[in-house]
Image 1 (cartoon, helix red, strand yellow):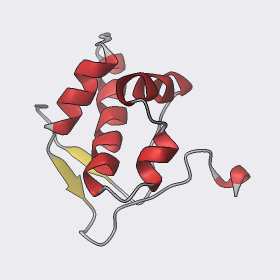
Image 2: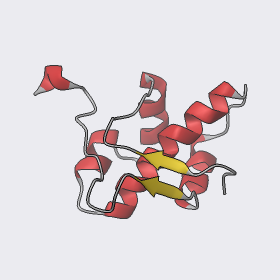
Image 3: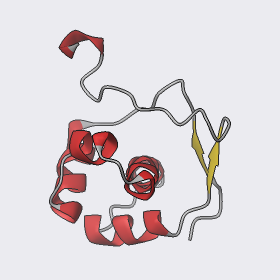
Image 4: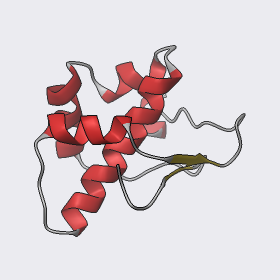
Length: 96
């Protein structure tokens, strides 16, 4: 579990290509597959995974993606509101 809750916001999120590759390594699915699926738990866990990778990077740590995915499953997540769970296009507006 993490010390600080993961904040899910409609403002989007920040990630690196290596985060997407690590997520695919941990889950066998792409970020787009996880976010566009019908399982809310997978969507939230994907957001938590990305945030935990960022926090690890900021702290100079690099955990195995499977360990980050497991930690993301147990992370406390705060949302703007229950009806405001973001579903951003991971490629940005250019792909729309």
